[in-house]
View 1 (spheres, rainbow, N blue to C red):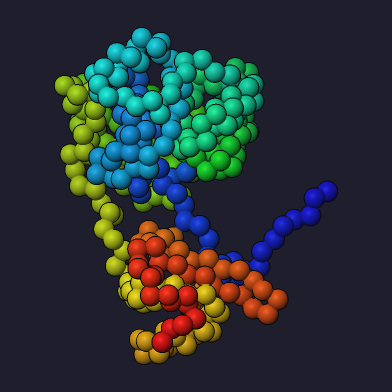
View 2: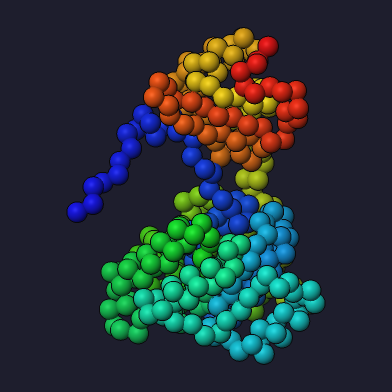
Amino acid sequence: MQKLNTIDADTLLSTPLPATRFIVNSLLPEGLHLLAGAPKTGKSWLALWMCLCVSKGEPVWELPATQGTVLYLCLEDSYARIQNRLFQITDDAPGTLHFANLSGRIGGGLEEQIEHFLEEHPDTILVVIDTLQKIRDILPEANSYAGDYRELSLLKELADRHHIAVLLIHHLRKMNDNDPMNMISGTTALSGVTDSNFVLKRKDRGSPSAELHCTGRDIESRTLELCFRQETHTWELTGPLEGENISTDPELIFLSGFLHELHSFNGTATELSTLLKQRTGDMISPSVLSRRLARYAGDLEKSGIHVSSSRTRESRQLHIACSSCDTSDGNDGKNWD
């Protein structure tokens, strides 16, 4: 039996880890996600438009998107229907957006098909499967909690291993609920396995207005006000985007300012603590400083500051590089004065 690979809490708190990569900033991170809506709500239009945005590197509403190859499994549509939808949305579809209207099922070849596509297109960052039911096992136990958990876990493992986002298009129950997430068809295992869940719900039958309810492990829970524009067949944001302001955490602002001025650093936490006191007059203990660097590593990365660490026989070394700073002055982190 393979031995457990563990990490102690002290080391974990002091180790800067890579930030979660977002395909669409603050909305769609890497991992497994579910977009659910009633039939004819417009969820497939939303998914197709989002695929176009990501494949072009264009914002999704006002949110920056990472550009990369996208695979859209349109399993309920013919190529003729997808072509018609593309014509109604754009006349400039990129070659980085790929479609397939046939695939295997979960545990029946689907994972291998996606793996093969990723080998041929290593820059793939988003896979959309429309719909989840088309790749489900047809056996009765497939709709049990254990069946839901087992099948979606296979897709989550694939997404996590390749650092991509997999978005599943799904349906809602007919029964209404005060919590839109409880309307997702299937057992609670579906929302338990996924990293994020989105529910697209029109305000009234036939109304162009809808709400996109968003919740997840790496995103802020919020509701986006949308309106479907018939002339462009796209969902337009009609309400404010909440939670998009740059962090005003004073610890993060202080740390970011100090590191930007420093340009680069290679040394121990004790040396960095001493340098910080010399330059700012503030005293932060080496252990606290290490933990703050680990805590804010993702936020610092967004502002061009890369933090990592390594261990030598004598000590743990911190490595800090500011990509947005001019390091031509030769400061290698040891020539501080």
